[in-house]
Amino acid sequence: MRLFGTHQQQTGFSLVELMVAMVLGLIITGAAISLFSTNQRTFSLQQNMARIQEQGDLAMRFINQDVRLAGNMSDAVSATFMPGIILDASSAVTGGSAIPPGSDGGADSDRLTLAYHGELDCQGNGAGVMTEIVNTYWVGGDNDDELYCRGNQSGASNGVVLLRGIKSFQVLYGVDQTTDGIAFASQYLSADEVLASADVDQSRIVAVKIGLLMEADLPVLGGGEQDQTFYILDREVDVSAGRTLRRQFFSTVAIRNYPWDVI
Image (tube, rainbow, N blue to C red; front, side, top):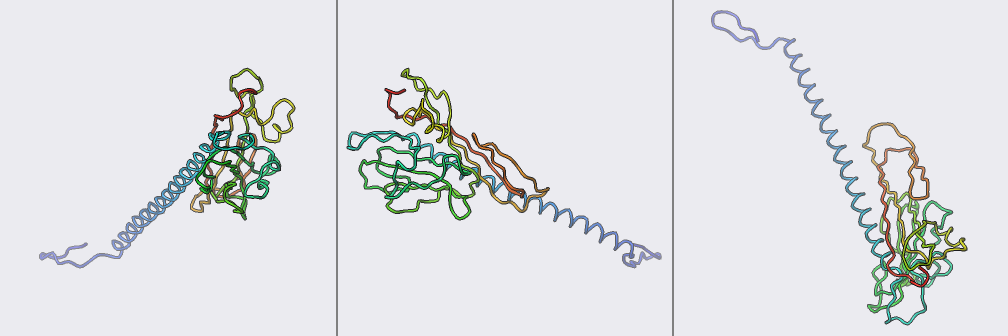
């Protein structure tokens, strides 16, 4: 701003001063927009990470609790003995129909079927009295990315969705190979390997390992798109390129109920 004469008369801003002010204003505005955009991406990332973590933990706790009940037998139920872990889908029935195939090694995800005496199946259905419960967990849906559970007390139900965004669901079974009265998982095998073994069977299963890979699309993420490989228990899982958030979950659960005479 220039001043002239003895009375210091104001003549306004020059064009150069206005242009400098405009440039400074644009710089400040651009920095504010960049900061806002970064904060939005960070918020979206943290929100999705928290959602995947929470949902994955909840599903794993639900399954783990069910596995701990496997093989539990009640005197109030007059039924023939059923092993806690059922490996052969053709030998078990859920809701009056065959267990969903889900796979024992041929597909991308495994199937987990377990049995025990209880009042409610994994869908929350039952007569309120002790009975034989058979629950099956598998991955299905239109895009093969939904973790289902179906119980034998739920009639002809197709099961309930426990979790979405599942890329891989893997199960290994810890078997005790020595009859010494001590429950010890000396080797972890797939369902197919247990069924094919002449030395061990499902009555010797004393632990279950569960692996889960979840994913969620995050288009706000920057950077290039790259293929990734994950190792979920005994399975190598290749995932396609994309700006995607992925999270792995693992747990090992000891079976509490099994025939001691074979352990």
